[in-house]
Structure formats: structure tokens, C-alpha cells
Image 1: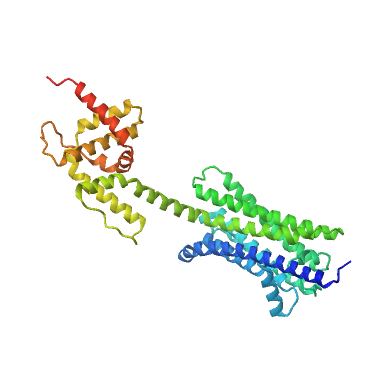
Image 2: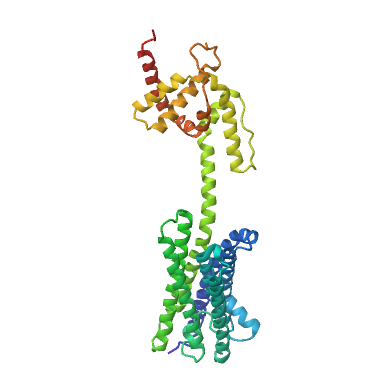
Length: 417
């Protein structure tokens, strides 16, 4: 029995409006994420347009964006109103989703065959995918033309018309096409993830996200088919189709978009982080060299991080070069032995010894120093290892301990002759 009281009717309308609003927000979020992925990939796609793999990625993301734009309840209502045909948005959305499925398979073919994309087998596989899924799209429109679907349904069309002749077959056809693609793509992606020799961690994480996204597509299909099958058997599980399937689809889209974004953005951010880390790592040695020269690297606010790192490295090496004749090689050897004796690993011991030697040269630079017993020192190794040396300068307590032990070793060594 349906309540005819005005308050009940108003409550029902408000509930429906809230549900439509929430669905629209979820779909627009997924669209925004997919559009971001497309925007990030687009410059590379345009620059390398002849690459079939990039074209497939671009087509996939573009179709995915179109699906989520036209599946939004507000867009469904607009499409139906503009065309004047109730529920014509359904075959349009189903067709876009089927084209998306075809682009997924074309992407898999491009990934699988790589540079051999011009082979006869590859071309035949691509033609087969295009022909089959084009046939599915044509069948969707034919079935819709034959079906009687006069009542507009924005969010529960699949279950509302699950028993309607021709519309029933249309719903089953698009779900089976989508399920076949999701199953094939998900299986191949997870096979690649588990394969040996995949060294790029960002690519691995991207593939894992793609695999999870296509796996969520399978969940979407299972939920939809369960709700539709329940209608066939006289049961009501419509909430699976109207309440569970949409957020699953949105999560799937986000995971797929992240899968395409992650290798590119992740590697970019990783490289930027390494540059900034290296720049900051050189700060102690840089400040020490600034104290010697009284100069600083010009502050270029608009310069790329790579340029600022190069300028800092060049400045440090230019300042270290004149210190080459003041580097006490004997002190460096004693400091290295002292650092090893204090339990430092060889690499850190080498950096600590170099830091002790540089500080000694800086301390004596302003004072006259006899060249007796001094050796011309090759500073090549020192100039090459400025990063570890700068890190060693961050630990003055270690430097003091090494210097003290090196001085003890010098005084306990008997004089020659």
C-alpha cells in the first residue's frame, strides 16, 4: 500500500532528490579523477601520437570520462528531455560503456604486443575486437528500438525493466560484454604484476591499481547481475543495483585513473624529491664554503630544482679546488683509520675522514703554513663525494671523536730516523 498523505509524498520526493544528488556527486568525482589522468597523459599522447599504446590509453580515458558524464542522473534527465525520447540515455550509456570495453581490450593488445603492433596477428586481433564490440553497440540500439520503455528511470532502469522484452536482452548483453572485458583485462594485468623482471616499482604499483580497478568492475557486474536475476525470479534486490553498484563503479574508475597516473606522477615526484633531498644534503658543506669565500649562490626563485642543485654543486667544487694544496693527506689516512676503529662503516669512515681534512684545511687557510712535509693532494675523489662529506658535517660529535683519535695516533707514532 502506498501512502497518499502529502507529507509522505514530499518525503519520498526529498529522499529521491537526495539520492540523485549523492549519485551525481560520486559520478562527478570519478569524472574529475579520470579527466585529471587524461590531462596528465595528453601532452605525451599528442607528442607521440603514432604510438598505438598511447593512443589506446587516450581513447580509454576519454571514453571513461564520457561514460561517467552521461551516466550521471542529471545528465540522463537532460538527454531524455532534449531528445524527447524516454530512457534514450540508456542505450547511449551502454554504447559508451561497450566502446570503453573495446578500448580496454585494444590497450591490452597494444601492451601485449609492444613494438610488434604492425604484425598480422595484432591487426587481426584489433579488427576482431572492433567488429565484435561494434556489433554489440548496434544490437543495443536495435533492442532499445524494439523495447517498450515509456517510464523514465534514472537510477534503477536495469531492475525496473529487467523483465521487459528486448530491454531484458539489452541489459544482459551490455553486462556480459562488460564482464568479459573486465575478466580478461584483470587476469592479464595481474599476470603481469606477478611476472618476474618488472623492476620499475612505480609501474608495478600502477598495474596493481589497474588490476584492482578492473577487479572492481567484476564486482559491479556481479552486483548488477544479481539484482537483475533476482527480478527474473520474482525477488526484489533492487538496492544492489541502485545503491551498491554506483559507488563500486566510481571506485573502479578512480583506481583505473590512479593506475594510469601513478607511474608518471610517482616517478616525477620521486625525481623531484631526490633533487631537493640532494640540494638539502649539500647545505652544511655549502655553508662552510660560503664562510670561506664570503659569497653565495644567487637565489633564483624561478629556477628549476635541478638548476639550483647544479649551481650549488658547482659552487662547492669551485671553492674546494683551491683547498687541494692544503689538504693533509696523512691526516686523512689517520682519520680514516680512526673512524674505522670507532666502528663506522668504510663509506662513512671515508666521508668523516674527508670532513676532518677539509675542516683542518679551512682552519689553517688564514694562517701561514709551511709546505714542509706537505704533499700535492689529488682532490678528485673528494670533489666527487661532496654529498657524503656534507652529510658527515651534520654530525660534529663524530668528527670531533675521529679528529681526537687521529691526533692521538699522530703523537704516538715514532718520528722517522
